[in-house]
Length: 387
Image 1 (cartoon, rainbow, N blue to C red):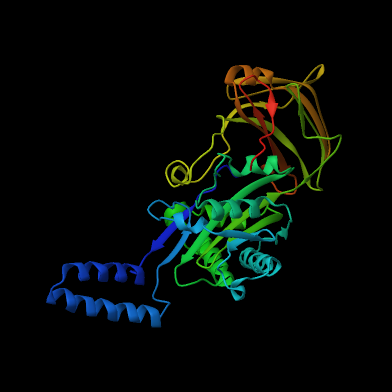
Image 2: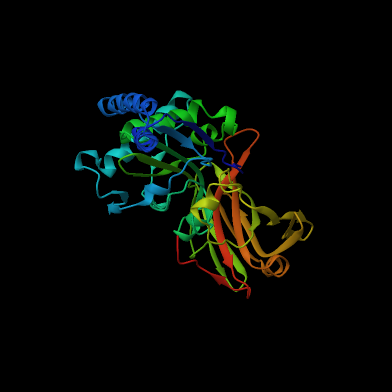
């Protein structure tokens, strides 16, 4: 099970023409011969920067944006399809979304193929594009968003029925940026420059064999590109309107893909989400990797002389299922989480479904589906309206 997605941030900056012109104004104010000589030198440097625009500020990041001011990136934004970019961007800088997605998907699958991992298919599920749009529009860089949501929470709100593991990256160049080149550079950094800062978290995510789909989001303007890769595990066909939650009762009924079977069901807890400012998102813990909360309980079964005993102890609380049936690839369970809500109060309770890969020996388990349940101060569930 992938519990944590680490992140990389690398930054290199050079002086830009703006700094030179600010310094020229200072020299005029001093009004002496030495200042004039310095001024002439600065003018020459500024001319070089104009003639050679590639000598500009350059940033590549894959999280940890502290120290980089992105406050100007959210100004004067408009939308084209699902992409955001400034209205001042010339039309030649716009790249069709289908072209961008196909390019990013090809890069991902090229990396997976190089390590004999099956390719992922593109899913039109909008979680990745939504997050890239949000980061560009609100000028931040984090797995959390401005509503305090983590990737798996947004995935649930948007209607996802599998599980998601997220990579994010950005690239900035004040002299202008090529979107497809930026995507390739960010993908390369996640694959081959990931060990020092992030313990190969991005790389592991790209190469995880259980990932079979990916949602890709790219948002950009004239100088900046944001990339979100939401890798999805989709191995369960759900039925009877599940996963569902009503009056404290969780219901799960599904059929696993061929070669897979139910391993266990866990419940994790996160404190209540709160709105976050771009400034907060640039500082710990929000500029780092994310986890799935604290595991507080689980559901399972053991065999006794009377048949199945529907109980499983994990963490602090034992939950007793009112039903728990596993028949080959089919499974169904119903259980009550009121005892968890009474103990932990308002917050986010995420039901996590783990499957076994029965084709491996020994069998390996992995996270296949999550559903986050949002509980308010009165103990009732609600669906956040803003993502």
